Length: 302
Image (cartoon, rainbow, N blue to C red; front, side, top):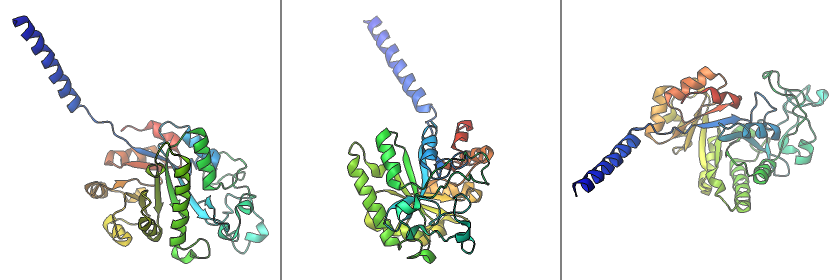
């Protein structure tokens, strides 16, 4: 009987010690590593090739991209609501007087995709691979993800501002409705998971986020800011606490990180391209990073 009690006590002690060690171990930190416009530093921005490359990087958890609206009401992946002469091959005579002459909101998807926006490369990103490519529709990216099954999270920025309403893009209510209808369609096409759990909609334009909130789509909403140093003031303009706060990385301080975390708001700065800056921000406690060079994420300690 004493031997039995001894074995029992030893087993119990081992269980207690194991639970104690497990409770004291450091929890795994989850960081949302995003590929900005796919991988703009290495491939043409917002291109299918760039997204494919970003997906090949183990550390990348999210594809970051921008959307505009075409004349035929398609959601097109593009940073500007016009063809950018810096990266697209355009008629020099047309853009001589107006660099924004190729207005995507007045062009059909077919017309937009007739232009090469990759062969010129990008003078600001000398490592970028020059290659012929076009501006894909958002549906093409979703179809690619559905076909390969290589889904990641998607951080989708709406490109709009009040001065462009009805000229370069629809008004916020229509823009939000187009997004909601698109997501509803692709959620139905992918019944194995909840697509809304993967999508965040971000914008500098609070109006788009406000309209999306009214639609109760269930996607996360992210407020982008550039020079703002007071997240409380930014949220006041929005009118409600965003799920994610995404400021210019140069404005981030430990106080801002703490302000967000106290309110259970994730903070994911943009666009961080130097490893030293990435590491500094991670050490502050940010929840993610957005970078043109997602290949650099493997160098970080967190």
